Image 1 (cartoon, rainbow, N blue to C red):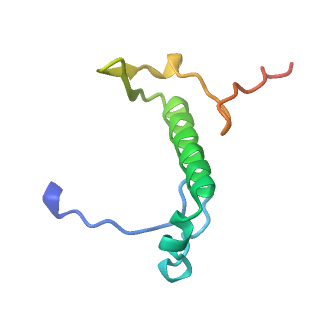
Image 2 (cartoon, one colour; image 1 turned 120 degrees about the vertical axis):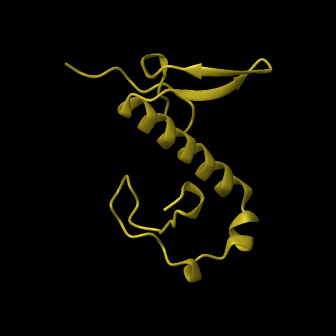
Image 3 (cartoon, rainbow, N blue to C red; image 1 turned 180 degrees about the vertical axis):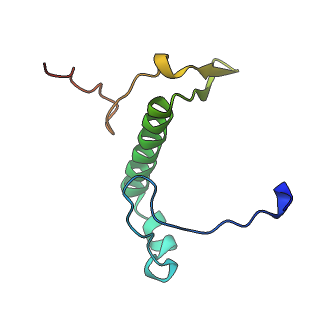
Length: 91
């Protein structure tokens, strides 16, 4: 099967293993009216993606000062959904 002909299916959420919500349950126009909810969801999605990249040893790519910059996983700084750094591990 060629690269362009690959079929994608929605399976369980990779992070939680829970089934994806049925499309019929989601009212997208209504959700998009709730700007704080959308912004919170986007912040959480970015945080989740960055954390996943760091844990998998993959770099992230960002736009910085007009240039595309690749950040290696060992230089990725994790934050919570509010942008705060997590506390240092105990022990």
